[in-house]
Image (tube, helix red, strand yellow):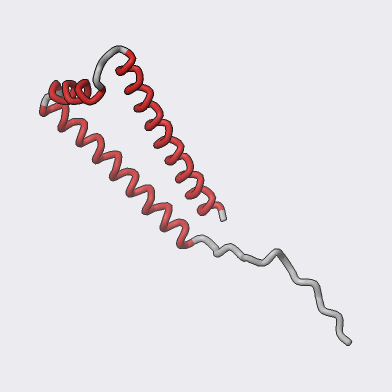
Length: 99
C-alpha cells in the first residue's frame, strides 16, 4: 500500500509544481505587459542572447534531470510490482448461522 501512496503523492506533488510554474509564467507575462513590453518579444530577445555554450549547458542539465526522473519512475514501478497486493476485503467475514 505504501508504494502506491508514495507514487500518487509524487504525482500530486509534480502536478502542484507544474501548476505553480504555470502561474509564475502567467504572472511574469502580466508584469511585462504592465511595463508596456510584449512578453513574446522579450523571450525571443533573451533567447537570442544565449550563447551556444550556455544553450548546450542548459540542454545537458535538462537531459540529466529527465534521465534522473526516468530512473526514479522505473525504480518506483519495480518497487510497486514487488509490493504485496492490497486486499479489497474489509477483514474477516462473520460466520453464518447454520439452520
